[in-house]
Each structure stands twice: as C-alpha cells, then as structure tokens.
Length: 447
Image (cartoon, rainbow, N blue to C red):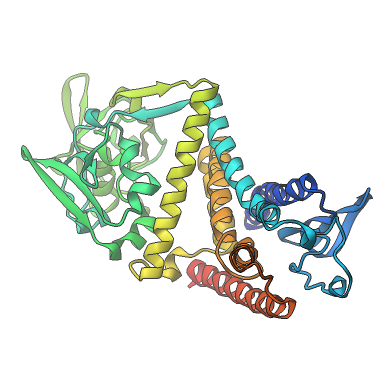
C-alpha cells in the first residue's frame, strides 16, 4: 500500500510541474500568434485524443489524454498534426503562412522565450520571498574523506581545506558545486593541505558518478557533535550513554568529524569501545551494534553553530538580477552537460533522463526542499525544456526555426513536401528518443 501512495505522490508532483511548464510554453506561442493577428484553432494541454475542453471565439481550449506535452494549432502552419488540406487554397490574412518571416520567427521562439522567462520568474520569486542562505567557505576548516569514497578516488584527503574551483577562489561553500562550475570544460578543485595549495583535477569519466552519488557536502565538514537522541532499549541506552554526550573516540582512535564517527560505527560488526566526554569527564563504554550496525543514537547538528552562515534578503530588482543570473548558470550547466555527452566524456545512458527519471528527481527535490525544492526543480526543468525545444530537429520549435532561417536567407520557402517529410522524420526521431530514455530509466531503476 505504501508503494502505491509513493507512486501516486510522484506522479502527482511530476504532473503538476509538467502542467506548469507546458502551459507557459504554449502560452508563449499563443500570445505571439494573437499579437500578429494569426488565428489559433486549438490550445491543448496534452496530446489527442481530446478528453475535455470548451470553445471560446475561434479557439478550442482543451485537455488531451496523453499528458506528456501540449500544442497550439495555428491556422496555415504545418505542425505536429501534419494537416496540409489548406495548401491548395490561397493564403488567408489570418494564417501563419501569410505573415512575414520575422513575425513567424517570434511566434516559433515564443515558447522557448516563455520557458526562460518562467525560470527567471521562479528563481527571482524564491530569492524575493526566501532570500538566500550561504556558508562562508573560509569558515569550513577541513573535510572528512572516507576510505574508498568517490572523493578519495579523486584525490581528496581528510583534513583538506577547500578554497576554490576551476582555478578560482570562491567565497561560499555552495559556489563550489554550482551547475556551471561542475559542467565547465575541465573541472578541478583547489585545497590547502599541510600548509600547501594543491590542485585536484576531476576526470570527465568520474562526472557520471558525481551526478549519481554527489561529491562533498557540509556533512563532510561537520565536526563531532553531542548526541541529541538515545533510543530506549538500544545498545547505547543499555550501556549507559546519555543525551548530550560527545563521542571523542572509537576503539581508542580519535574521531573529529560526524561523518567519520558514523562511518566507523556502521562499518563495524564487532563490539566497539566508545569514548564520550560528559561534563569534561571521559567515559568508556563497550557496545555491540545491533543487526543494522547501529547503536541507537541520533544527532541533529545545526550548521549555524559550526560555520559562518550568511543570510541575504533581496529587493525586487535584486531578485530579478539574481533570477537572470541563476537562469544563465542553469543554461550553461545544461549545455555543458550536453556537450560532454555528445563528446563522449560522460555517459549518455547515465545522464540522459526520460519521464521516469524526471518524475523521480522532481519528487526527491520536493521531498528534500518542500515548496522551495519543487519550484527550484521546476525552474531547472523549464530551462531544460527550452533548450531541448530549440534543437534544430524538425517537429520541434528549433526545426521550424531552421526552415524560417532558410526562407529568410534564400527568399524562398521550402516546399511543403520537403517540410512534411522532414517533420515525419523528426517525429520518428522524437518517438525513438522517448522510447530509449524511458527504457533507459527503467533499466537504471531496476537493473
């Protein structure tokens, strides 16, 4: 029963995000077409068959049964419907084909533009309503790197102090892992180690693993903290460990980081000796972890107690500037990721996601960040949708734009037969890609 609830929750959150993205994309086409006096026959969320709608004026506003997109049908335009009945007639003043090339270019690109505007608006709205919380990088003294972890494979060591990324020093911890930094042509980190500056290059072959596992979080830098919870009847409770105790050593070896402490406990299947500091006095306890390699203790560390945390509040214009900046960073990060996939530097199979992967990521972002998480991933997906749509593939906006650019340069419109044929090829390519990414999602999830 629980998995059904989880599935329905995932589908509901994904559907909400998709509905927002498709609505704004098609709204861009719709408003631009209306602006230039074109007749819009249908505004559809979802693809046919039509399951509900209403007619207002010349336009049928409806919802389709296939909820993986949407479309605006403009009179006199060869689109996804492949409708060419009108070609035998003279162009009408309200038809797409009768308008100047520059107007048609605006109509075609309006969906992409509206997706970008939506991303800017979401990022700006979040900045305006919630501000920003950042951790000063110079307050993060050092990091813990577990043996055989991804960070260890890359060359990081416990005790390293992070100072920069890609040869540039950055002021905040979050700046180290922004999308545009991670997807730069080459990725490297700078650390201070034993008083010397060391550069750690990251091989492109490891970027797949970073995307799946993550690299370094604030948890890696969190020092050992007092115990905030001791579960009744568990090993720690039976041994006499108390809430507020600070664990200072495991089996006589000092522990300085929370992640180090957790790693040592969970990796031990034998009895362990835990040293705690209680009111300045050390106490040793011998415990046997339970079947899950746990002691029955919990921690609730507050980063503000250990790092310098800065909060920023933004006015309207500052929020807009920040929205534009974040959108630009997202664009450069996504384009950088696509470039690395096409160059073979990172795996297409591991990085190209379909509807299943997108639904899961949307659900995870919402679970982790609530309202803010949902809108952040929606903004990211809006930029992704814009970039995908502007690709020069017939049937996508970029394909229509390609025809219009050709017409503008040659002063000659491509023949309807050529456009129809290319549209059909483009449609088959999109279907093939959809099938590939969907099966890829399933294989990654269950394989």
